Image 1 (cartoon, rainbow, N blue to C red):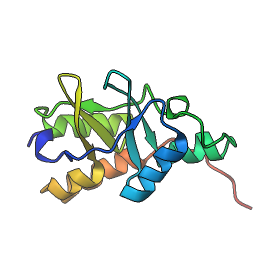
Image 2: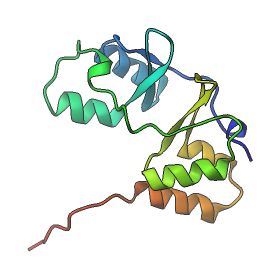
Image 3: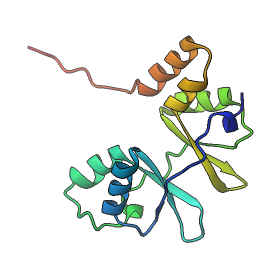
Image 4: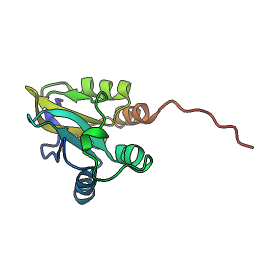
Length: 146
C-alpha cells in the first residue's frame, strides 16, 4: 500500500503570518488538531497542533494575535511522498513518535496522513496497535506515590 492510498487530500493550512487565534478557530471549526503552516512562497515550513496552542500559547500566556510562525513546530515534521510505501511511513512515525505526517509531491503539499487514516486502511489490527503504542509511548519520569 502507498501513502497516496490513505492520505487525506483536503488539507486546511495557515499562512505563516496568520494569527494563532485564526489557526485555533480553523482547528475548532474543521474539527482538526493539526494544521500545516505555509510560507509566502507556498511551501510547508512547519505545523501547528492543538498541543502547540496549549503549551506554547496558553501555558506561556502569549497573545492570540501572535503569528503562528512564532509557535509552530518546525524541525519535527514527518514527511513522505504519495508514492512512498505506507510501511516506510509507519516506521518513521513510530521512531519519531509522531502521529501525523505531511505528504509532499515535488515539494508541494498534497495531503496529510494521521494514525486514524492508517488504522482505517490497515488490514492488520496488530500492526496498527503496535504503531499506536510506539507513537504514544514517550519517555516519562516515574513519580513516587505515597
